[in-house]
Amino acid sequence: MPPLFTHVYAPFVHTCVWRTGEEPTVNVLQDLEYLLSDLDIARDFYILKGWPLLLSTLAHDKSRPLRSLAAHCIGNAVKNQEEFHDWAVAKGPGDKDVLEVVLDAIKEEVGGGAPGGGGFLVKLVYAAGSLLRGNSVASHRFVELGGGDVVGSLLKVRSRCMAFRAARELRGTSSED
Image 1 (cartoon, rainbow, N blue to C red):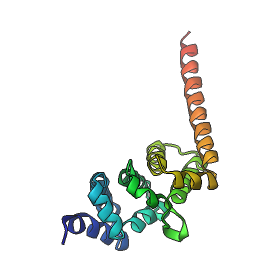
Image 2 (image 1 turned 90 degrees about the vertical axis):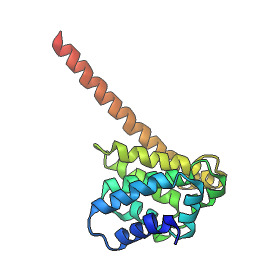
Image 3 (image 1 turned 180 degrees about the vertical axis):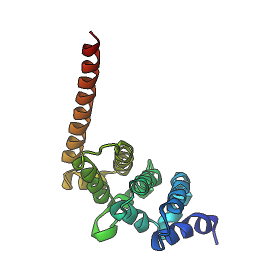
Image 4 (image 1 turned 45 degrees about the horizontal axis):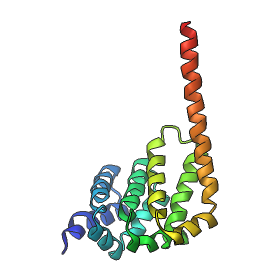
């Protein structure tokens, strides 16, 4: 049995199917996040059908830390690899493709105001960027899914956060005068 399967994939499947608590899954996803940076391991993970479990974790898990790690795993697996471009539009849970799952998660975070969820949002944007980089098929799908509007909503949230910080800082300096 290859080391990837025995040390990462099998525990990942086990914890996804037989969830005994968040901690083992977090540890496995942290290991997976690192390992998926390797081209061969990312390919093996996809071939061994690990991709749908990762997408399911991102799409359906209630835990923000797990969803954040799943998003980062997706970004690490596909970044800068032309041979993995098809993965961006591969169907996942509920017949949604990977890009759609990532964009839905971004919309959910932005719609919820993402208070304190900035780390998750950053990992979602990283995953989206990795899926889109140099990928014309994913770029067309991004447009079909209204990805421009999603990015626009991100910028609005970002500018609102910056405005609130600036106002808070101004209040702080004006109260000292």
